[in-house]
Image 1 (cartoon, rainbow, N blue to C red):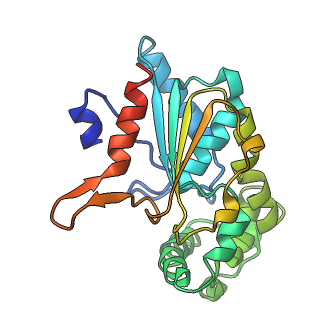
Image 2: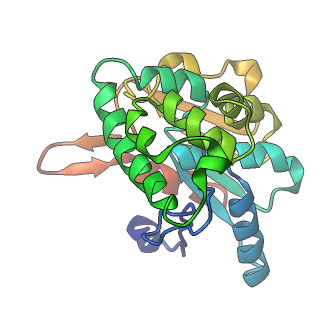
Length: 244
């Protein structure tokens, strides 16, 4: 947002439910394909600023959701352009990758926060009847497959973790995107494998896919240790400027 401001762009940020520092008071939470809130938010911004072009940037889980939203809306999207950084385009592949090698460390850290948030919901909701998971069994959830199968899927109306992954993955929506869209991905992303990348016939002519050998997960830092260059910021601004 600082880089955008320096280059003349006004920016706002949308948090997913429960990610802003304030607890989500509902039994439900958010998930990788949860585009409903973003759609409402974009509509609100358009109503407030009807003469402004609206560009969107999504990172990681938010990038997957943004691409899915663009594919769902097609020509009806209120966005003029979008950038998706390190999107987990095929969620089941990513969930399997997170349970391998050093990626297990990231999985453990992310699950700690997710399980803590889920545990709090038992204070205000009858979660046993909502998702059929006893509170004491939360600590037994060791993988994303476990967590999503026990909580994310049932609380959001999916039949299983695989059903959730299949319906929420953005890769299947890329061919329907009509707005100029840039996807930035790295081959050494520890959260996923190159298998998540779409083939040429899976993306529309409006989508530009840029893949680098290095960059990690939403990393993409060049330059030196003492003079780092945050390449993603520069690339996003250049992409948007070309459309103005």
